[in-house]
Amino acid sequence: MKERKGFIFDLDGVLVDTAKYHYLAWKRLAEELGFSFTEEQNERLKGVSRMRSLDILLEIGNIKASESEKNEWAARKNEWYVEYISNMDASHILPGATEFLVEAKELGKRLAIGSASKNAMIILKNTGLFPYFDAVIDGNKVTKAKPDPEVFLLAAEELEVDPTLCVVFEDSEAGIEAAKRAGMAAVGIGSKEHLSKADIVIPSLKGASCKELVKSL
Ligand code: B16
Ligand code: MG
Image (cartoon, rainbow, N blue to C red; front, side, top):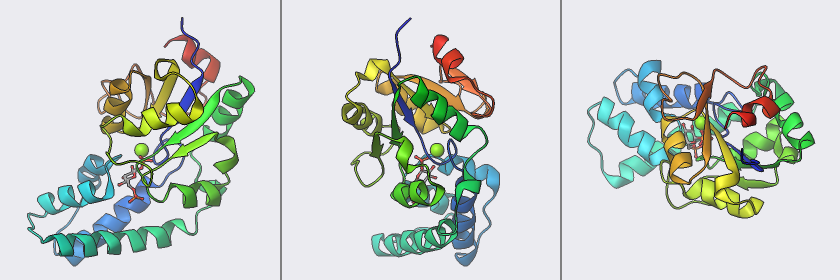
């Protein structure tokens, strides 16, 4: 069994419940553009970059747009989203996440954030999660979106841990694929149906034992 030293966490959907705010902001944009957008359709946007998310949304609404319209709409969605998350606090941390981070720290693991979001820092600061992490790689530091492995490889580099000794915790299909392409173990957070490529899938971090989990990887 390998000793997994680097733990890399996706943010939205793994540590914090921000997916609902992304959904609300995209839904508001869809409605302004004249179509409806369901929670099921929103699954396709999870873990995907902002501009790619907009492309998927416009495909659902069957809308063609110029580059300048797209930039304007993405900026509008982001303004609403930032407004929603500006009121976030520790109560938005998902159940079991803090306990899991505390245990990982006690076990001497090096912890990083590997998120597609350009708003990751606001979320980490508002929720009080920031001090747990030795490295934060977010959407401002990467050039290629998940499923490209860049975000996780950069996290491993900042943690100074070999990628093969890292574990990624992810709630999106694109993120699991990115972790596997980086040569890392992948723990899926959510349903087996959406995350079939993960090494293990657990419904959430609630009640998860960090020690037991890494034994099975
Ligand atoms: P932003 P993660 C991702 O964060 C979200 O899951 C995804 O829905 C969002 O579009 C993306 O961040 C970009 O976010 O618009 O804030 O830059 O899951 O990788 O932590
Ligand atoms: Mg996520």
